[in-house]
Every structure is written in structure tokens, then in C-alpha cells.
Image (cartoon, rainbow, N blue to C red):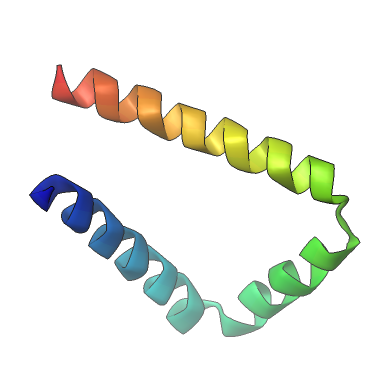
Length: 61
């Protein structure tokens, strides 16, 4: 459970750094997601999640 909280905290760190360093770019990216079809966002999200699971599995075995 500790690893899960550590991973979530690292996500917040990375997102925070991106918004701090590139606020205008992050706003543009967020605005552009409105134009993307929900199915495409869902598919991209599932793909990234699957890649994350594989990476965690490879790093933890």
C-alpha cells in the first residue's frame, strides 16, 4: 500500500512541475482535449495504463 501512495505522490510531483514550468502549454493541451473524441481519450488512457502496469511489473519482479 505504501508503494501505491508513493506512486500517486510522484504523479502529483510530475504534474505540478509541468504546470509550474509550462502553464500556457498545459492550458493549451487541456483545451485541445475537448476536441478529441471520448473513445480516443479512453483508448489512449487504457494504453498508457497498460504500459504503466507492464513497467511496474518489470521493475518489481
